[in-house]
Length: 320
Image 1 (cartoon, rainbow, N blue to C red):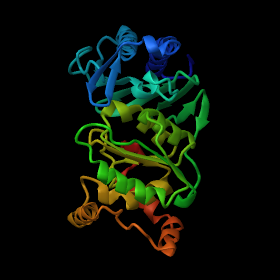
Image 2: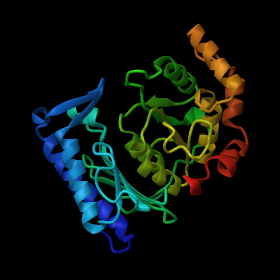
Image 3: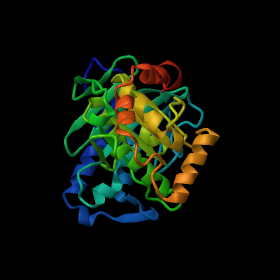
């Protein structure tokens, strides 16, 4: 831990590393890990629970008056009405973990009066530690990170997550993926949203979108993105997204273009956009399935007003 970091961030780092040690030990013999199923395709392991326990013990050991919101135990631990609330995903990417697919992480954020002030995303497989404190920038292993500088959507690598729970609208997601895939350099689905957001912050990917996410999936990663110079919001670009179960992130110029592309799929979209999507779903073809090349080029090379719009009124980095 560094003496230059905020004390609360140092405690979060200590908790994340302790959880990472548990995860790494279990990964040596993942076949022996006990697994239960919360619902179809939604798993929890004894490793999730042990990781969460050591995180909570570490945080409350240092700050017993703080509140806790954790994926597995909810608000069972900690003070119920504190202005300080730790938001914890002890193992984001559980399905990857139980298959031995090495893309998963620990995510810890501290919200003060509802606003995330400190964030840690720890990848124990690679020993990558992403950290941020509001107003002090985002870091990977003590190195300052920034979002990518690409401005043309056609050159960008975008990450996402696929619907996997009962009731998820898979057909609508297929339309979204179709719209994004034909306008970008590639679409990836790593399987751990907190790490996806950390990768946007580090410039490894240029943008990210997903629906159905919970606050513990996005709380830490969203601060990483904004402190790295990016924007985070819902699909229409509104900054108050944390508990709306849709998340869009990227560098300012790419974020603006993705809002233009994905906004019609938002549950907050206008009636006209929703009607167009319903019509596309009925026809079972992507909305705007065959965009004219000149239109795509125009979108990608549009002046900064798309990004500026996102920066100016919608997803201001200071409000995420």
